[in-house]
Length: 183
Image 1 (cartoon, rainbow, N blue to C red):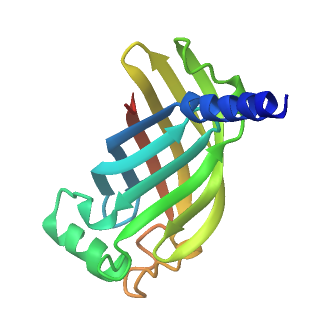
Image 2: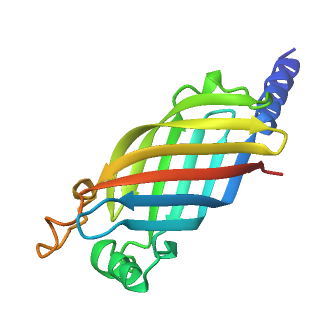
């Protein structure tokens, strides 16, 4: 009898391990935008990696800072050297979870409004953040989009005094990701 109970618990444990559904993307797009008196500042990174564990709602993102592209090469240089210090802080990360993951039916086509909460690390500073997102699920996979804002000052990103009154402390971020099921 004891062997049967152990076998049942072992089988249930193994089946729940295999039941985990993970989705990933290595081409998630992260865009940021800041309006300023001087000029429009926009950067785009289409080489971000992300994973969602559908069974738990856990979500992770990794963004290589020096992979952001700008319209002007001088802007890209200033971004990497003066603001983000990308040699010292090469990546930004997010580790968290979907707060209302139970409401998402990963095997059913539809659009789901979600809230994401976790730790975002930028420029060596980690802050807990919460932001809205949307998951669109169809036969191609999962498409996620989120729009939120952060403040440079929250992440110790210093705007030089010379241009401080001309650049915005607020950065608007848009994330788009097409997830595929891990095999």
